[in-house]
Image 1: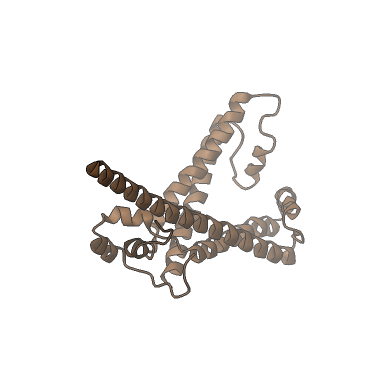
Image 2: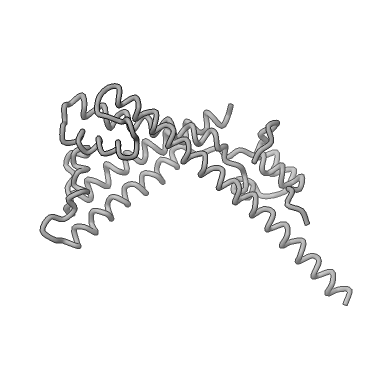
Length: 100
Length: 134
Protein backbone atom coordinates (compact mmCIF):
# COMPACT_ATOMS: atom_id res chain seq x y z
CA UNK A 1 0.00 0.00 0.00
CA UNK A 2 1.65 3.22 -1.11
CA UNK A 3 1.02 6.88 -0.40
CA UNK A 4 1.21 7.65 -4.11
CA UNK A 5 -1.97 8.42 -5.96
CA UNK A 6 -3.30 5.93 -8.49
CA UNK A 7 -3.80 7.07 -12.08
CA UNK A 8 -7.50 7.69 -11.48
CA UNK A 9 -6.83 9.63 -8.29
CA UNK A 10 -4.17 11.65 -10.05
CA UNK A 11 -6.62 12.43 -12.83
CA UNK A 12 -9.16 13.69 -10.25
CA UNK A 13 -6.55 15.81 -8.47
CA UNK A 14 -5.82 17.58 -11.77
CA UNK A 15 -9.36 18.98 -11.90
CA UNK A 16 -9.31 22.60 -10.76
CA UNK A 17 -12.36 23.79 -8.84
CA UNK A 18 -14.29 26.68 -10.40
CA UNK A 19 -16.28 28.83 -7.99
CA UNK A 20 -19.87 29.91 -8.44
CA UNK A 21 -19.24 33.59 -7.72
CA UNK A 22 -22.83 34.55 -6.79
CA UNK A 23 -23.22 31.52 -4.53
CA UNK A 24 -19.95 32.32 -2.72
CA UNK A 25 -21.26 35.86 -2.35
CA UNK A 26 -24.55 34.74 -0.80
CA UNK A 27 -22.80 32.29 1.57
CA UNK A 28 -20.22 34.86 2.70
CA UNK A 29 -22.98 37.47 3.00
CA UNK A 30 -25.03 35.19 5.25
CA UNK A 31 -21.98 34.34 7.39
CA UNK A 32 -21.06 38.01 7.83
CA UNK A 33 -24.68 39.12 8.27
CA UNK A 34 -25.69 36.45 10.76
CA UNK A 35 -22.36 36.83 12.57
CA UNK A 36 -22.93 40.53 13.18
CA UNK A 37 -26.64 40.01 13.89
CA UNK A 38 -25.98 37.43 16.64
CA UNK A 39 -22.98 39.35 18.02
CA UNK A 40 -25.24 42.40 18.45
CA UNK A 41 -28.27 40.52 19.78
CA UNK A 42 -26.07 38.72 22.32
CA UNK A 43 -24.88 42.07 23.72
CA UNK A 44 -28.43 43.51 23.68
CA UNK A 45 -29.75 40.58 25.75
CA UNK A 46 -26.74 40.64 28.05
CA UNK A 47 -27.57 44.27 28.85
CA UNK A 48 -25.50 46.38 31.26
CA UNK A 49 -24.90 50.13 31.61
CA UNK A 50 -23.24 50.54 28.17
CA UNK A 51 -23.74 47.42 26.09
CA UNK A 52 -21.32 46.91 23.19
CA UNK A 53 -18.96 49.87 23.62
CA UNK A 54 -16.56 48.38 21.09
CA UNK A 55 -19.08 46.91 18.67
CA UNK A 56 -20.91 50.25 18.41
CA UNK A 57 -17.77 51.66 16.73
CA UNK A 58 -19.03 49.89 13.59
CA UNK A 59 -21.58 52.70 13.41
CA UNK A 60 -18.75 54.86 12.04
CA UNK A 61 -18.72 52.73 8.91
CA UNK A 62 -22.34 51.56 8.90
CA UNK A 63 -24.57 54.65 9.31
CA UNK A 64 -27.65 53.72 11.36
CA UNK A 65 -26.02 50.77 13.10
CA UNK A 66 -26.19 50.63 16.90
CA UNK A 67 -26.14 47.94 19.59
CA UNK A 68 -29.95 47.62 19.75
CA UNK A 69 -32.45 45.17 18.28
CA UNK A 70 -33.13 47.48 15.34
CA UNK A 71 -29.39 48.06 14.97
CA UNK A 72 -28.80 44.31 14.68
CA UNK A 73 -31.16 44.21 11.68
CA UNK A 74 -29.47 47.22 10.10
CA UNK A 75 -26.08 45.57 10.77
CA UNK A 76 -27.28 42.34 9.18
CA UNK A 77 -28.05 44.14 5.91
CA UNK A 78 -24.75 46.04 5.88
CA UNK A 79 -22.67 42.94 6.72
CA UNK A 80 -24.62 40.86 4.19
CA UNK A 81 -23.91 43.46 1.50
CA UNK A 82 -20.20 43.52 2.35
CA UNK A 83 -20.00 39.72 2.45
CA UNK A 84 -21.89 39.43 -0.83
CA UNK A 85 -19.64 41.91 -2.63
CA UNK A 86 -16.51 40.29 -1.18
CA UNK A 87 -17.61 36.76 -2.03
CA UNK A 88 -18.74 37.58 -5.55
CA UNK A 89 -15.52 39.47 -6.24
CA UNK A 90 -13.49 36.61 -4.71
CA UNK A 91 -15.21 34.02 -6.91
CA UNK A 92 -14.82 36.16 -10.00
CA UNK A 93 -11.10 36.82 -9.39
CA UNK A 94 -10.39 33.20 -8.44
CA UNK A 95 -11.98 31.92 -11.65
CA UNK A 96 -9.97 34.44 -13.66
CA UNK A 97 -6.65 33.48 -12.03
CA UNK A 98 -7.34 29.73 -11.92
CA UNK A 99 -8.05 29.76 -15.67
CA UNK A 100 -4.54 31.03 -16.47
CA UNK B 1 2.11 19.55 -3.63
CA UNK B 2 1.72 19.78 -7.37
CA UNK B 3 4.49 19.03 -9.79
CA UNK B 4 5.79 21.91 -11.95
CA UNK B 5 4.41 20.34 -15.15
CA UNK B 6 0.87 20.35 -13.77
CA UNK B 7 -1.80 20.32 -16.49
CA UNK B 8 -5.37 21.03 -15.39
CA UNK B 9 -7.98 18.50 -16.51
CA UNK B 10 -11.60 18.92 -17.55
CA UNK B 11 -14.12 17.82 -14.93
CA UNK B 12 -16.63 16.19 -17.30
CA UNK B 13 -13.90 14.29 -19.08
CA UNK B 14 -12.44 13.00 -15.79
CA UNK B 15 -15.92 12.03 -14.52
CA UNK B 16 -16.47 10.05 -17.70
CA UNK B 17 -13.05 8.33 -17.63
CA UNK B 18 -13.20 7.42 -13.93
CA UNK B 19 -16.95 6.59 -14.11
CA UNK B 20 -17.48 8.62 -10.96
CA UNK B 21 -20.43 10.99 -10.54
CA UNK B 22 -19.60 14.59 -11.46
CA UNK B 23 -20.34 15.72 -7.88
CA UNK B 24 -17.74 13.34 -6.43
CA UNK B 25 -15.11 14.65 -8.82
CA UNK B 26 -16.06 18.20 -7.85
CA UNK B 27 -15.67 17.46 -4.11
CA UNK B 28 -12.26 15.81 -4.62
CA UNK B 29 -10.99 18.39 -7.13
CA UNK B 30 -8.15 20.73 -6.37
CA UNK B 31 -8.29 24.40 -5.30
CA UNK B 32 -5.69 26.52 -7.06
CA UNK B 33 -3.80 27.91 -4.04
CA UNK B 34 -2.03 30.67 -5.94
CA UNK B 35 -5.29 31.85 -7.52
CA UNK B 36 -7.14 31.88 -4.18
CA UNK B 37 -4.23 33.61 -2.44
CA UNK B 38 -3.97 36.26 -5.14
CA UNK B 39 -7.74 36.91 -5.17
CA UNK B 40 -7.94 37.19 -1.38
CA UNK B 41 -4.84 39.40 -1.33
CA UNK B 42 -6.41 41.80 -3.85
CA UNK B 43 -9.71 41.87 -1.95
CA UNK B 44 -8.01 42.56 1.40
CA UNK B 45 -5.94 45.31 -0.20
CA UNK B 46 -9.00 46.94 -1.78
CA UNK B 47 -10.98 46.79 1.49
CA UNK B 48 -8.14 48.30 3.51
CA UNK B 49 -7.73 51.05 0.94
CA UNK B 50 -11.45 51.89 1.02
CA UNK B 51 -11.68 51.68 4.83
CA UNK B 52 -8.80 54.14 5.20
CA UNK B 53 -9.28 56.37 2.20
CA UNK B 54 -13.01 57.14 2.65
CA UNK B 55 -12.74 58.42 6.28
CA UNK B 56 -9.54 60.31 5.34
CA UNK B 57 -11.30 61.97 2.43
CA UNK B 58 -14.34 62.80 4.60
CA UNK B 59 -12.13 63.97 7.48
CA UNK B 60 -13.80 61.55 9.91
CA UNK B 61 -11.25 61.69 12.74
CA UNK B 62 -13.13 59.26 15.02
CA UNK B 63 -13.13 56.50 12.38
CA UNK B 64 -9.49 57.22 11.54
CA UNK B 65 -8.51 56.82 15.20
CA UNK B 66 -10.06 53.33 15.20
CA UNK B 67 -8.38 52.32 11.93
CA UNK B 68 -5.02 53.60 13.17
CA UNK B 69 -5.11 50.71 15.68
CA UNK B 70 -4.16 48.43 12.74
CA UNK B 71 -0.59 49.72 13.16
CA UNK B 72 -0.35 47.34 16.12
CA UNK B 73 -0.34 44.49 13.60
CA UNK B 74 1.05 46.32 10.57
CA UNK B 75 4.19 48.22 11.66
CA UNK B 76 4.64 51.35 9.55
CA UNK B 77 0.91 51.75 8.83
CA UNK B 78 -0.15 55.34 9.51
CA UNK B 79 -3.10 57.49 8.60
CA UNK B 80 -1.91 59.38 5.54
CA UNK B 81 -1.56 58.74 1.86
CA UNK B 82 1.85 57.00 2.23
CA UNK B 83 0.62 55.02 5.23
CA UNK B 84 -2.33 53.76 3.18
CA UNK B 85 0.04 52.29 0.61
CA UNK B 86 1.99 50.50 3.35
CA UNK B 87 -1.29 49.19 4.76
CA UNK B 88 -2.47 48.00 1.35
CA UNK B 89 0.78 46.07 0.85
CA UNK B 90 0.41 44.47 4.29
CA UNK B 91 -3.24 43.57 3.63
CA UNK B 92 -2.38 42.05 0.24
CA UNK B 93 0.35 39.91 1.80
CA UNK B 94 -1.89 38.84 4.70
CA UNK B 95 -4.74 37.98 2.31
CA UNK B 96 -2.42 36.02 0.03
CA UNK B 97 -0.97 34.02 2.94
CA UNK B 98 -4.44 33.20 4.34
CA UNK B 99 -5.82 32.16 0.93
CA UNK B 100 -2.74 30.16 -0.04
CA UNK B 101 -2.62 28.33 3.31
CA UNK B 102 -6.36 27.62 3.27
CA UNK B 103 -6.20 26.09 -0.22
CA UNK B 104 -2.99 24.16 0.47
CA UNK B 105 -4.29 22.65 3.71
CA UNK B 106 -7.61 21.82 2.07
CA UNK B 107 -5.85 20.16 -0.89
CA UNK B 108 -3.59 18.21 1.46
CA UNK B 109 -6.57 16.97 3.50
CA UNK B 110 -8.48 15.90 0.36
CA UNK B 111 -5.36 14.15 -0.97
CA UNK B 112 -4.95 12.30 2.37
CA UNK B 113 -8.65 11.43 2.40
CA UNK B 114 -8.39 9.86 -1.06
CA UNK B 115 -5.43 7.73 0.11
CA UNK B 116 -7.36 6.78 3.27
CA UNK B 117 -10.39 5.71 1.21
CA UNK B 118 -8.25 3.60 -1.11
CA UNK B 119 -6.43 1.92 1.79
CA UNK B 120 -9.70 1.13 3.51
CA UNK B 121 -11.05 -0.35 0.28
CA UNK B 122 -7.91 -2.45 -0.16
CA UNK B 123 -8.10 -3.70 3.44
CA UNK B 124 -11.77 -4.62 3.07
CA UNK B 125 -11.04 -6.49 -0.17
CA UNK B 126 -8.12 -8.31 1.47
CA UNK B 127 -10.13 -9.35 4.55
CA UNK B 128 -13.01 -10.57 2.31
CA UNK B 129 -10.55 -12.65 0.34
CA UNK B 130 -9.10 -14.11 3.55
CA UNK B 131 -12.62 -14.92 4.81
CA UNK B 132 -13.25 -16.79 1.55
CA UNK B 133 -10.03 -18.76 1.82
CA UNK B 134 -10.54 -19.80 5.46
